[in-house]
Image (tube, rainbow, N blue to C red; front, side, top):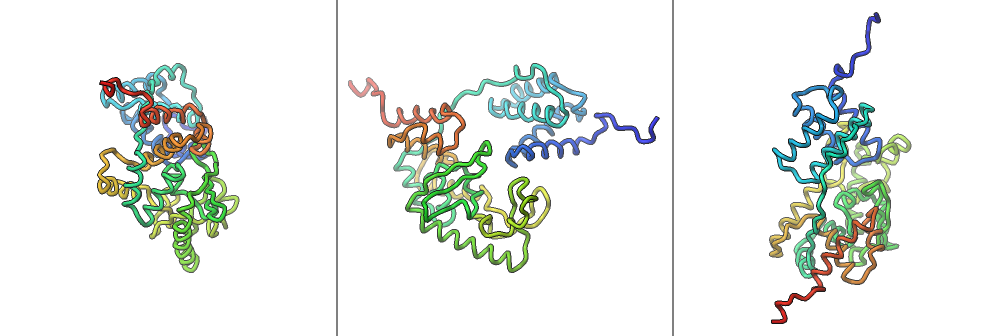
Length: 330
């Protein structure tokens, strides 16, 4: 019998499994938000089963956990399916175990119409916003960006002279090019000039470089110190890297634009719940109302399927009064 026998799966520390889960997610170029969400569902699953080791569980235990989410916690279909995706990913990528029949547990996700602002509402909302938050809000609406895509912009991604903005590594790790609104040219130049003052200060103080995507940090570590890779929207102060603990300058946190939108919504007297994503929905809807074809909008939004983009056609029909109510004829 060997002096140091290989431990059974049940003896592998659960924290180590969570670390393996995070590494597997990042290795596939999923976002940090996905890594946090999947790790959270993994922990809740283990706690629900009284910290029983995942290797000793399978489809039956996952189904019981998902039923608990639906019946006891009354979670939405999207939340239910995210938990399922997380656990299927964990078993397949970390434990190398396929779960037979687990797809039957998937919830049918109903399509919800997006919240969309009218053109006057957008004008009132953006008219009450200024500074960095105002610029970010105008980029969200003017280019149809996701909030993470806006915050992750690098200096090399914004070409004011050519009037184009490049979104790199968007959802699904896809790149796309979008026309920049002409009226944002000067504001973007001012923002880049401000970012340069912070970059120059970091270089004078020999601070750690900014975070680079995935394996590029190992392939070209010097790029972390370069101007072209610096953030367009850098944070004023440094903070600790959540993965490595390195103190470096990150981009602004999404909470900043969220807070600014909440204030501007109240000032504009808008009763709808306005989030950063509502500006993206409004961008797509207003393009459709102007006659832009659905395929072009799909490309600008970075949707994998045109069926995802087609949901905006329902909103446009309602906003344009395509079907007249018989009450108006009385």
